[in-house]
Each structure stands twice: as structure tokens, then as C-alpha cells.
Image (cartoon, rainbow, N blue to C red; front, side, top):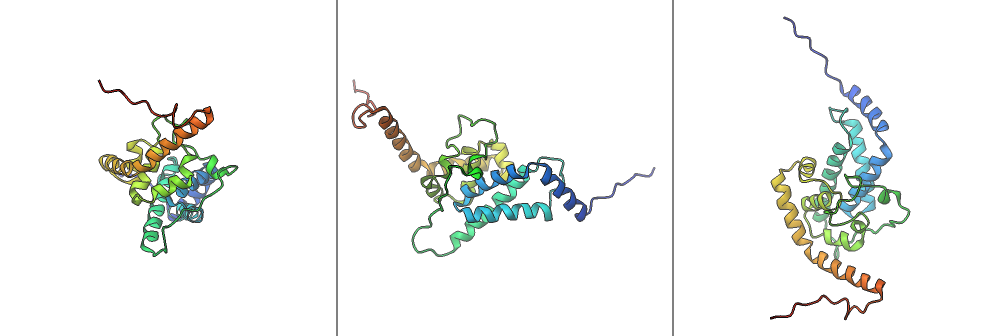
Length: 223
């Protein structure tokens, strides 16, 4: 019995199909999503521009074999790998004083406003919303994390990825994702405390309350 073998697609055929797939799969939306993710990863608009461009270049030159599957998960995986490489290179350089993120104007910026979490609506378990995660204070707090911790925290606590989705994207085990997230959250605890105080003060100022009196947390009396 003769088994019929189908010819494997050549690199040229894969590249041609990749071009058609990227054009059909809302290139603009994927680009905006990747830019927002890479900016939060690197804290640099210039680095985000370069990484997004390199990601799409790789998609054209070395596209995934299965082009029938959604392309965004593959793009996110490549973009995060490039972002982590960029962070490692940055830490090997010498700086005079601490490295500071480059702030961007979020109002009217489609690249930051139109990127969305995995779910249509922000999950109540997500710790940080999309606008807070591009503030200077948040990006400075992320500098204390390793590249892997930064990637895990952003996917889980900002973009609302599940543990299994994060593990698949970063090529980690689910146990490693949970451990890495726990360590990242512990490092971010100082930021979270300042964030809670700032939020309480803002609510008090909005209501016209005296921060030192009515907005002071109530202490239980000892019996």
C-alpha cells in the first residue's frame, strides 16, 4: 500500500501566507496591543517601537507553522522575549544615577487607550488597570523586578491572563508562574501600600472629608 505524502510548505510559501494572515488579522489592533505591552515591559516608548517592529519582521521572516491559529499569542510570546532581552541588556550598561522610564501622554494616545485585556471586561481580580500601569510611579516600581517577574506580573495582574495562558506564553510551568508572581507581588508591596494611601486621600478630598479625622481608619477598642 502506497502512503501519499503531501509536500511541506517552503519558507517562501510560509512567508507569503504570513503576509496575507497578518493583513487579515487586524494588524492595527495587534500592533497597538503589542506596543502597550512592550511599553509597560521596558518603560521606554523608543524601545517599544523597536520591539514591535522586530516582532512583525520575525513574523514575516520566520512565521509560525500553524497560520490557521490566532496570531496574537505567538506575537505576544515573541514581543515579550525581545522585551526581556532588552531589559537584560539595559541592566548590563552603566548609568549615572537610577534609570528613569520615559513618560508618555496617555490622553488621546490610541496605542495606550485601545489595548485591552484578554477578557472583554477588566476582571475584578486584576490588581492594576491599564491606565495606572503606564504611570511613572508604577513603571518605577517595576524596575525592582527581574525581567521574568515583570512579564508575569503584567500578564497576570494587568492584562488578566490566566496562570495557564501566562505559562504557555512565557514557556514556563504553571508552578513557576505562581512562584514568580508571588515574589513579584511581594516586591510590589511597598508600591501597593503607597497606592492605598493615595487612593484613600483622593477619595477624602473628593468628598470634602478631613483626612486626619473622618477618613482615618477606625481602630478596634481592646476589651
